Length: 102
Image (cartoon, rainbow, N blue to C red; front, side):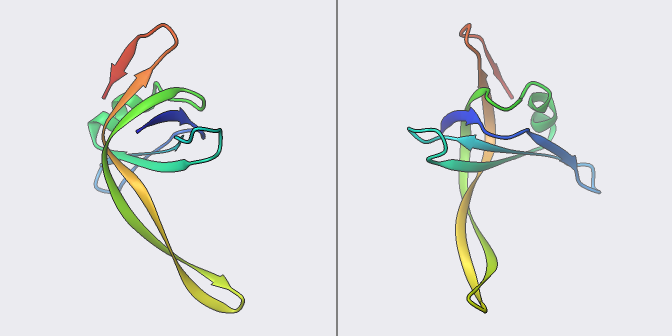
């Protein structure tokens, strides 16, 4: 998947010390058409997080994972299904054709 980062990347560390990077990638043909949440963990997440910012073009390689959340609609609780990308690799693409992969 490829697209532009739509939000400020968030890097957090779990109590066990694992880095978790979270970004939202705008991967649609038109801006805002398809926003995909992306998660990456481990040292690769730490390495690339410092280079990412909103608007940067990236290419993501990984797997899709189903998500489920609950919301109250019209007084009833409803399950909402979604999907997120678990990234194995994120490649940063810049205007000069330079690439950085983690």
